[in-house]
Length: 439
Ligand SMILES: Nc1nc2c(c(=O)[nH]1)N[C@H]1C(S)=C(S)[C@@H](COP(=O)(O)O)O[C@H]1N2
Ligand SMILES: [Mo]
Image 1 (cartoon, helix red, strand yellow):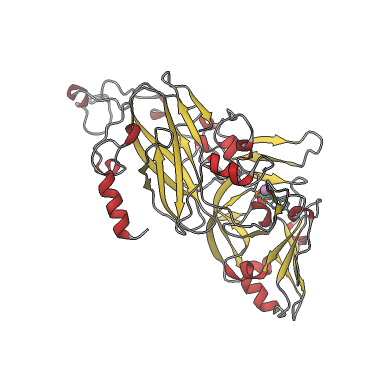
Image 2 (cartoon, helix red, strand yellow):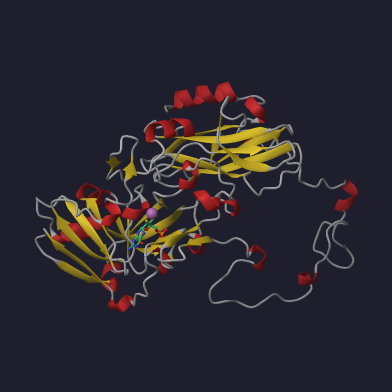
């Protein structure tokens, strides 16, 4: 969208309420809003001005708490969240028959901003987390290369490193949305197979240039060190573009669950291609047709054919607040907040509806807005206490518009399992009860 279009759109939506009580997103910036939960202090409460002491007590409603009267706890070697946040956890959905096969979900209902804390990054393992001893781990590159190479982790750390701040999303994320009836689970526990981190490591192109790819080399087979011997074929163009051999995740070494000591990151591409515990890269002429690119991670279409090597995760968005479990506090002013992302680049616009898609208002995009990365959006909403249906719709820089669920079902049929990216609807009933609905 050009700047001019954007301005015109702003003009159209400036002023007071849009449909269903959505307000001008810029009201946040103008600070013209007073959220109903804020306690207004009476002038008489504000007598204390300086440091708190016996002669000048705290304002009447604000107590002097016990922790203000004694020294705090000492330092710690590795910080942990407050004990009052102990319910902010990944939700593990394992497979009782194969304990190492399953997922754990990122709790979006409890998170803000765009970066997923390392301990809450979703997990998808096919056969558990291997107990890799980093000093014994090697990366080998061979096949159609001029010079096969082998690296230790310490050798890789000496290369010039680069970062990608990007999401990783499982192709199976949101797949409960294909079900006939809408699941009533917290938002993270059915859309949380996607997380976003700063991944730092060696650009794969650096290593490939050093090994010297032969002209016939068109694909790279990525082999992992877990017991499932996971392998996936990647086209050389992506490897040369923005692929990273990640050693660090949000500044610290990659967590064991997420691929320690070395994982492949392909920004914007489906989770399965981001091979964890990477140990071997083989340059070949054609894809290897492994299990993870034939019987799994392909999309069965209505005509019975399967779509294969559809690597890019298309634009998607979800409202993370208010959603299931959120306590509505009667009619009044609320902040709608959510996440949008696209495997094709930047998010250009996120539109929000409070009337089930009849009218839309553009949300504020919180900076930074980075390509192939989570983008946080917000919009103020004046809830009148009547039943409302909240939706969000992402549009990326290529002009791709997140589809409605009906459109996605029409295109993909009823056999679909992977790559659901349609609009999600939350109904706020007049009593404040929030549920997931199909519109
Ligand atoms: N070696 C290996 N790599 C793997 C997997 C695995 O089981 N083994 N799972 C894949 C899948 S399906 C996904 S969605 C992502 C999950 O990455 P995460 O667990 O770091 O979130 O890793 C991919 N890479
Ligand atoms: Mo996945």
